[in-house]
Every structure is written in structure tokens, then in C-alpha cells.
Length: 175
Image 1 (cartoon, rainbow, N blue to C red):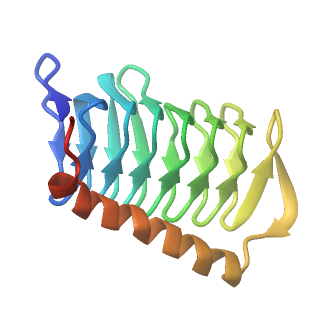
Image 2 (cartoon, rainbow, N blue to C red):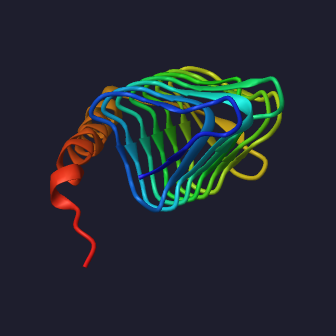
């Protein structure tokens, strides 16, 4: 796994967390327990701090970065879809889903069980309330809220990544 010290900072990686060999995690980073850090992900704590909660999936080619002296915080059970960019976010709360190819920009807040749709761009300081859905460029909040069926379906998807974090250390073998 590509977990590296940067200057005085060594990343903290929680128990049962899997970091793919082609991912980079370095600097002032704390990753919780049972997380999945997928191929090509870049978690760059070189001049800002990044905190990732438990059971969070950082899928393939996700980029997470923080501004100097600031903190980017992701809660528990968050899903960051393939190719998303998270930059200096004030908070992505528990169970949020950040869609593939989306961007969540500086000082934004994404509420508990909120959804940022695929390809959406959440601008600086924008707030997505709990259980709401944001779509488009720039992102706009829909009137529709996340319902219990959606939560149940996504809870299963989230559990798959926690299971992958458990299975990969023994099952992944370069040829």
C-alpha cells in the first residue's frame, strides 16, 4: 500500500482498512476503521488535514485535498464515487453519497444521507441539507428527499465496500 509520511506527518490508518497498492495516502491524514481506499485514489494531506470516518469507501481515482491549515472531514459510512473530487470540504456527514465524477468544493457541507448526483458540482460554501439531493452544474437542490427505500438499498451497497476492505488483503494478488 502507498501510505507515506510527508514531513512531520504520518497517516493514521484504522484497523481493517484496505488501501489499494495504486492509491496514495500521505501526510496529515486520518482514515477510520473498515474503510476501502480504491485503486488510483489520492488522499493528499500535504498542507491541510484530512479526516475520514469509519466504514467509508473512497472509490477508484477519487482525489481528496485540503487547503493549508484547514481540515477536510468525511463522516462514517460515506460513499465517494469513482473519480469524484473532494477539495477542502468543511464536512461530508455520515451516510452521504457523492456520485461518480462529481466535485465538492471548498468549505461546502453535505448533510447526513444527502446525495450529490453523478457529475454535479457543489460550489464553494454550498450546503446540501440532510437527506436532500443535489444535481447539475452548478448543483441545485431538488425538492425530493431521500426515502427509506433509498437508504436501505445504499446501506447494502455501503456494506459491500466494508466487506471488500476485509476480503482484499487476502484475495488481491498481482500477477
